[in-house]
Length: 186
Image (cartoon, rainbow, N blue to C red; front, side, top):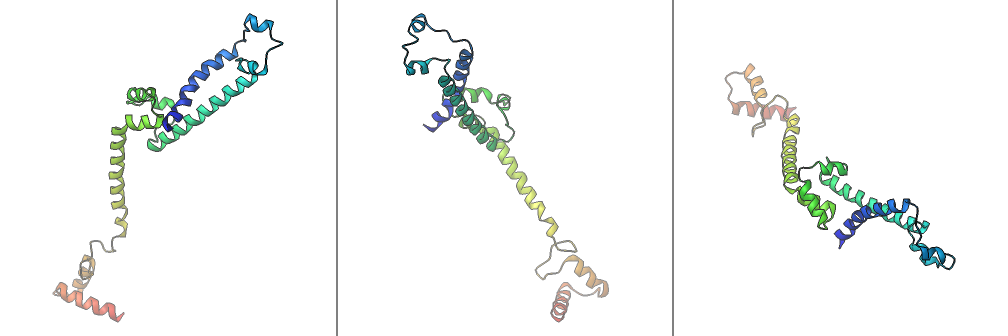
C-alpha cells in the first residue's frame, strides 16, 4: 500500500504533464456545450480542462508528485550519496533492472535498493574495512614515549637502554626492581 502511494504520484506526474500540455492549448467547446453555455452548472464547468479549478487541481497533483519524488531521491541519496538526480539514476549500470522494477509498481527507493544490492553491499563492506583500518591507525599516536610496547613490568626498551648505559651488567629483573623503588621514592 505504501509503495503504491509513493509510485502513483510519479506515474501520475507523467500523465499530468501530458494533460497540462493539452490544457495549454485553447480549449475547444463541443457544439452542444456552446449552445447551452448559459445553462451549464458550476460542476460541469469544473470538469472542463481549461477552467482555473482544473488547472489548480492539476498543479496540486504535480506538486504532490514532485514532493514524493524528492522524498524518494533523499532515501536513495542516504543509501548511495553518488546519486543526486534522475540523470544519475539513468547512468547507473543497474538502470535496466531498476526501470523494470519501478514499472512493475515498486517504490523508486525500494527498486533502487533491490537493483543495486550487490554493488552497494560491496561498497559498504569496503567502507567498513577501511574504517577499521583507520580506527586501528588512529591510535598509533597513543603509543608510549620511547617507542615500543611496555612489558608486564612497565619498562620500555628505551628505559632499559638508559639504565644499561650506566649499569651494563644489570638484568631486566634488576632494572625493574630498581625502577619500582625509584618510582615509589619520587
